[in-house]
Image (cartoon, rainbow, N blue to C red):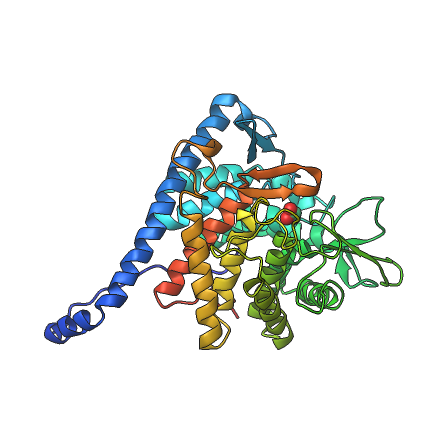
Length: 421
Ligand code: GLY
């Protein structure tokens, strides 16, 4: 997600230099071809996304789910749509994808649908039951505010940021992820994805506390979640009074010592974003270390879409996680904004490969199939045998985001515009 506005307005001028332009255009023909291919890739994916999300909206309406609280599509099970309520951690991704459809097409039918499903999340502004408000409100209201500047979105977001910040404990230096008696003060790597929301709130409200919390949380995560090789633990449990680390373990990965693929993706995305927002080289160094871990891993398949865990026991027959692939692609595109040319090329080449793989029949659904979702083959929680090798709303969301970032990059703009001063 990004809260920063991007302008797609292009101006074209005819000048008296047409003959020179003609020569220049012959010389730049390969660049033109690459640009056309990029546009084609983005267009075909958004065309399909439009068809799929039209059918998802219809399924919600026809089944009656659209009129209930359980109206946010998450996945399919036995061929049937599974929808969730507002407090589910994934509730913001469906409205977020609708916003991306509006951003790409400019078609107000998508804006109206996005507004409708975003508005259904308003109560979350006072929600303090877990940490995932960055996903739930950031992807929905955050994108809505970015694209429409609606002041009502801003008020809801600022109230939501207050609710999220209420989970911060200064003795730990972190936001508590879950209220679960199995742990004293659990913090999962995914929590890095809340920080962009807080940094936005600091700028919008002028209250520096949100920024202090975000930076401190990232520093605490950097100190305690990572292994020597740059991979991260899923969960660190802290003593809430002293901030001492009690345990390091996994919940959704294969083993406490193994790198759960989506966890690595959240970390890469989160630390790259922290560099954008703070320009602190420590965060950039961490993002590069995570990228190095992922990109050089011997069990990252040639098509660059990870297995659900880099140490999953049955590789190469283990299920993949398209969601991790999409999140990594989006993060690598942003990372390429901040690194030297050789590293940027590596990030871009990998992200492109991931987008091409996800756009291929191996991962992308055919129109009218896959319950209306765009991507197949994501893995939610393999140890619980839950949502294994299925479509997931967040895979679609980060895929669309990555496509928009890729288009920006290929037209000479940063993948993510710098934050407003
Ligand atoms: N944040 C939960 C997950 O990535 O599955």
